[in-house]
Length: 399
Image (cartoon, rainbow, N blue to C red; front, top):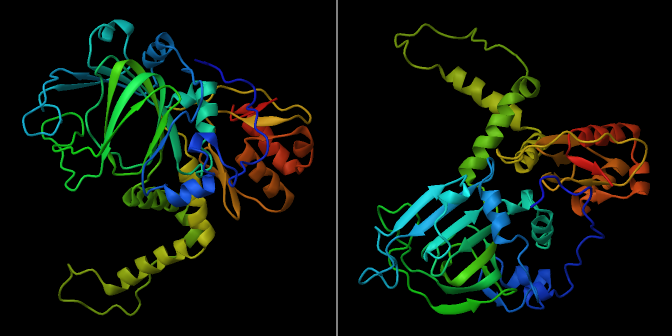
């Protein structure tokens, strides 16, 4: 576990998306996205040959004990399947706790049927961050985090389905996965986990270290540890439509004075009324015109979306960085989120209009997560000043 990120990530050119990858079963990212993404599962034996856990058990437990790290403990208290439940666990047999967890708060290692789930390990471990970046053939706007699930023998979280795509990489020991499409994905009542009532598996796979299973959204699965094991979950971000609308409207509201001006409502033609409680139609028109004016420039919406997508999670913070003196190679901190569109670059919730050579170089920084010394030297004075501010904020590091 790394309390401080290493100075720079070592990335080269952009990923060759037409090149077959061992981690995708010798499919290219282009073929995988067309054939499997959001469509059907894919089992990849030895996607990562000779894979070893990036964190040992003690280090993972230490991470789960830290404030600001999201962790959960799932304990299966009743391992006897309920009759007629097709293998689903009895509703009274699950206990869910939220961290942080001191080591003494975790069950004994020889107690079967418990799991520790630690989210966002990529934010705290360089090796985990590097592994997550192997999946950047999917846009950064969709890539979420790397979660580690540690389990003792027979541990799991019950049969369930996720609303997002997920790659399940076995890191230690063996986990038995049962998967299947569900006709009626009903959930058990009175359970702290989203466990399916009638799970009907179609396929069963035993995953060994280095094996990986891809599952599209909504595909039911149940993973049970066969002895002690660790599984890495590479998850993807799926914003809800209502969430996106709420975030964008809030950001537009903050900029409303600049977008629509401060013109006052006028009603010189207002007639006398005998129903004073009714809102005048002119006010509806006034409000509608104001909202349309705020949305008139498409760049406004683009900027709001980019700032929202790059906003760091609530539990992410940055340490004070080192200033950029002179011209040197730089790279993004592993916690930094940086993206771009046709007109802007976005970094950690801030958006900037960009064009010309500066835009080209900033897009390289977003794609490769680093700029070489010569590339930094080609930035304009204004862009260099921005880069210096990002370095001082700890968002960018000097190599």
